[in-house]
Image (tube, rainbow, N blue to C red; front, side, top):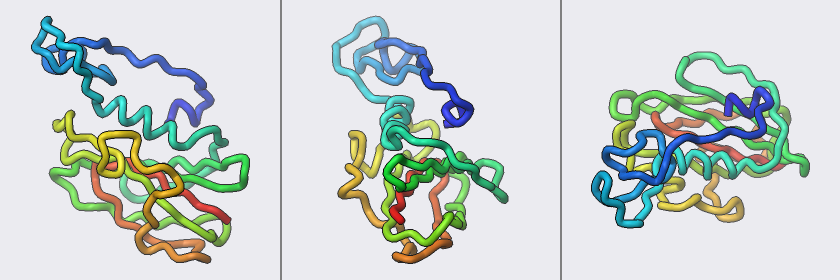
Length: 174
């Protein structure tokens, strides 16, 4: 997200379709077979989920944000051509060691609706357990995403607890 915020329009991701154990550690996809004995069954890694998750933002323009408090929490607000707004909040705290972080959001104006989608895993070392909305896919489509806990129509500011080790996209209509 930081690269996109700075204007980068294309990134290459290194890796290969080698074994999940013993192959390229940063590969978005890997083969389930033993090292140097591929079986053709591919597994999505956290990097792959991250690419799918970021794609949920679609075409958008970055907005200015202010973040205070926890140094491991990042916010990326974006505006869509139809006037809606999304905010990706990345909580890079270790989910095995740190409690959820309370995040207070102040929107530019009162929002009519708010939905959310979340990418998470139980720990940083649990490569095969990353999920989006608890699903082994790209998660829920925008139309069926869950409501934001604690958000009410007409809110301009509210507080939300976000689990450590998550990336969350909050979507708002005005």
